[in-house]
Length: 120
Image 1 (tube, rainbow, N blue to C red):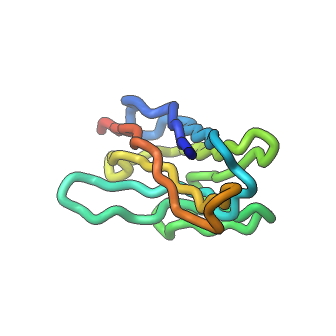
Image 2: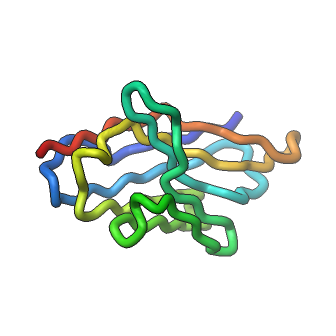
């Protein structure tokens, strides 16, 4: 079994910062993509940022220059440093990882989500 456990959400004023963490655990053989998605009320889930095992990055245009994704492969953990937060960043943030276990070639896993609220 694989689990993704997120932490670091909360309430912050506009212009502030938050750091999200997501740790993967279980019978993990390797992790390819790790990333963050978000879903605001009434909107579809969207990609925020993604990083491959080799360090290739992808960001949504709306967060470029403000958010930084990183990962610690030894800890199977991905981070999202969020700076200059705006009210429109308010959403539930979900961790996602494409994981190969000892029994499954590759599968997408999701965390439970963590609320980020930015007040104006």
